[in-house]
Image (cartoon, rainbow, N blue to C red):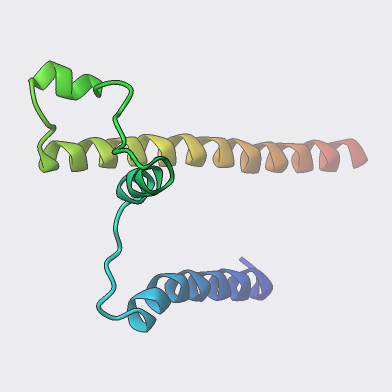
Length: 110
């Protein structure tokens, strides 16, 4: 990795940390609620009626009640892991393709 690439990576990492830390430090005591709650409150404000979901989630039907927090967290982590795996696979393919093209070009020149 070149010095320029290292500098870019370090700057991007610092920006990520700043994005995470800035709201926590500037908005002390604020409640960071989920988008589901904010959406249902906004619908109630606009329509004047309480939001009623269109359907029941599949896991709630299978379990006969609300999904426990631990299971919800586990499913979210699995989903995240699968997504990261797919992204890493394609990024690896693109990098390897670029390397193979460079090797072919080098062989053709000789």
